[in-house]
Image (cartoon, rainbow, N blue to C red; front, side, top):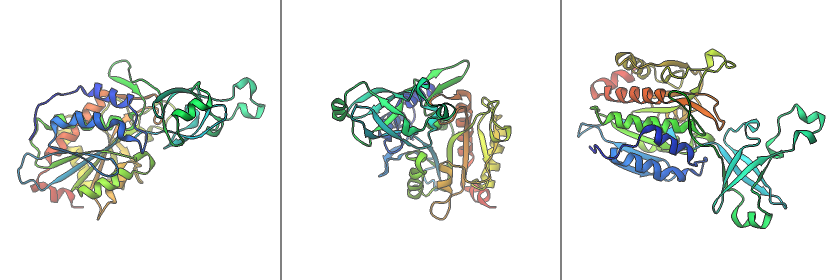
Length: 358
């Protein structure tokens, strides 16, 4: 068991993740950061063919036969270069679920032969037709302006280059933080914090922390990594809709009140009950998140891989999902990680079979 080593502060780690670039299909920009941060506290790190980073922390029993997989996706929604106009403006499309209403006037970085700063522009309201004023601007009517003529743009930019919204991670009041792509880099931070917690706990199970790819375009990385690992238990760490006044109470979870424990068809009832019992035992705040259908997370892919994997999902409350100003509470990150670590520690060969029975 590897113990000790340099411990990067979880908030600082999350800041580096958020400020980095990892558009779905182009996640390699975060690989070095993630592997270097986990390597001193895990026993083995591999990267599979799709690009998932699989980090194994062996159990404290030499002959452990239990495998628990923890998945959080490192990819983020973004944009992609689609066409370069004669005047050098860039036309673009979305990668993942971007609401066009949120990107007008945003600063961006085009990841061409070098990182290029630009802005998203559109027709000024003064020149819009009366029929256009009350309508959201479509993505196909927006352009990215790098300030270069076409010849220079063609020299540095290619069709298919990824684009990220430029937004710096910031601390708000108290323990709240804001940044882009906290969906689901908050989940990576939870895995990191849980890994550190486990260094102080006994756990029979071998734990596979997986930073998955391409979740935002179809949970692809979770399918392949789950198939490869074939775990006894799969746990997806993602984000849930943080409550704000305009959202229905039943569809949200409150920030600062702990992780959401998902209830629904995706979720194994015996493992869910054990998770709730652990939260109560260690006085860890939690909330119930009702999701009657597929969760829309890596948990769905994990559940239906191979013969089926007993699956759980934990959600960090997050406001303004799929915008560049997502907000979370670092206390929720810490409590999610604590619950995850104590749950893993509670799983033994003696109780696993009973927990998995319906």
